[in-house]
Image (cartoon, rainbow, N blue to C red; front, side):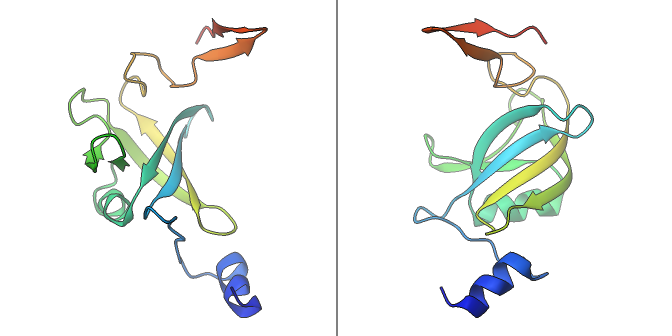
Length: 125
């Protein structure tokens, strides 16, 4: 990448998402009110476009190989308040209002355990 291209991406005001070789960006969903990380997922161009169009978080499911809207079966959608992009535009932070637990296990966040010694301990939330 040229210095000019790098400057445009890192310092410019143009949104130039840098998808990886699989056509994906990492997306971190954060509770806008509490600041807690809720989940990490991936977005392709279609998921990003649908998120921006609808205001609801859409992702690319690598296991299912398709677009999915968070909460499409559970009703626990993520209403997107703001999308932030990192310096080299290959990762996003979605500031969201969750309509219920973010994790498919029923936990508020997918990050409901911490490493302690050789095991995991559930975090009270």
